[in-house]
Amino acid sequence: MGKKRRRRNWSDDEKRMICAQTKLPGVSVSQVARRYDVNTNLVFIWLRDERYNVEPEEVDVARFLPVEVIEPMAAPEPQLERPPSELDIALAGGHRLTVRGPFDPDQLAALIRKLAS
Image 1 (cartoon, rainbow, N blue to C red):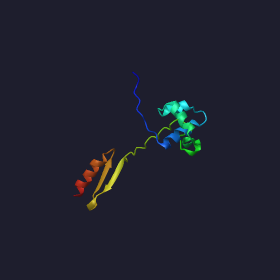
Image 2 (image 1 turned 45 degrees about the vertical axis):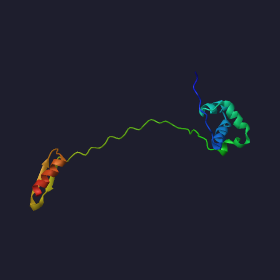
Image 3 (image 1 turned 180 degrees about the vertical axis):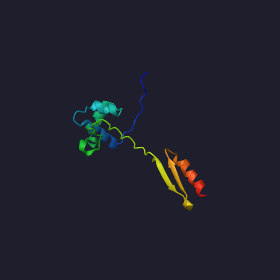
Image 4 (image 1 turned 30 degrees about the vertical axis):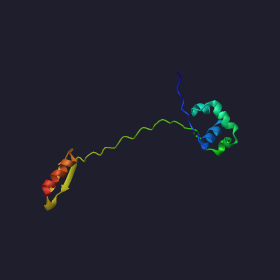
């Protein structure tokens, strides 16, 4: 058994849009009918009806725009900040703290809080 088709009620605006698409250059009535799953003979009936006989410019239809595909640009390498090889920190009360070599900023901040309290 074939597939059972359901009856669809098309609005007047939808019929005008479908009929207008059949008048675009290079487009056949059967192509438009297949796009909307409508019997081709039904679209021909609509085309004979003056209510739906409009020019394609009068109805907004989907249009394709030219697209140019380009090679993606390589993302620049992120510049990682290197901690200074030596860091001098002046603490409250005239004390100084000197850090040499790499360090963890979170651990350094926790150390400074402990020393300042």
